[in-house]
Length: 195
Image (cartoon, rainbow, N blue to C red; front, side, top):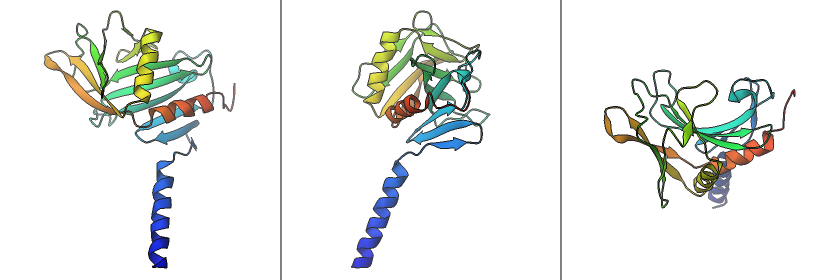
């Protein structure tokens, strides 16, 4: 009987510890933390003169189960924290092989129990940092509302309009871990080796 209770306690403790995220320092020179289905990263250095997000941002993302030829997620949802001013940004990345985005139709994000949010390519989305396949939400108020909905949801369906594909390509993405990833970025945004 005591042996069974001891085994049960050990199993429960092991399960609980595997759920808790622990930050670790990666050999690439970054602090990282896995939060369920999200990976959050803060590089060791801040480079105010950087021409890409990596120099001034922490970031956290989740990706599709579908992979591209490089073995990376074909579709990603990423939250960025600007380390200089604390602003949060959301970006959608389309890196699938052999597809072309139909920019005449909107991207849609639909969370369980929420009204779907549509983002058109002319007024609502923009590319930054010399990328062609990563789309940032322009309006800070819509972005803030989306972040709140993401924190309160378990999953989102990303509908990506593709040329010659009707209806849009639906991609299921997990939101389990997004709130903890945002917290990690807030904590580690100013932890730097050099600034």
